[in-house]
Image (cartoon, rainbow, N blue to C red; front, side):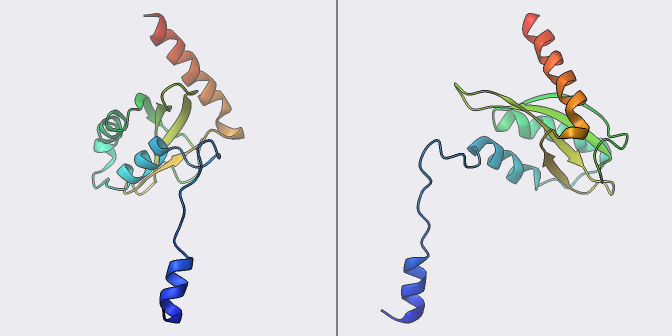
Length: 127
């Protein structure tokens, strides 16, 4: 076996064991699907809603970013969770050029928006 073949054989990744704290499959699927965005600001909410539905997530609402998150024109608030696991609130952010979407996790500057989204979910579940 040549040196290059040995290096490739040694670099073969192994599967992560369950419960290791790796990236949840739903989140990875969501992020990869959002990379396919080729619309504009008007298409943003509909596109994110479709992607969320396709990966088993839930589109909650969309709103102007109003400088809550840096380099973000609009925010779509999503709920994503694995079956039998705790769900999480995520923000799909349309950049200021309205060309790409990225996922942001709630942080110090968006805790109020996260709490609002959790309350929103509570109201929906009571209906």
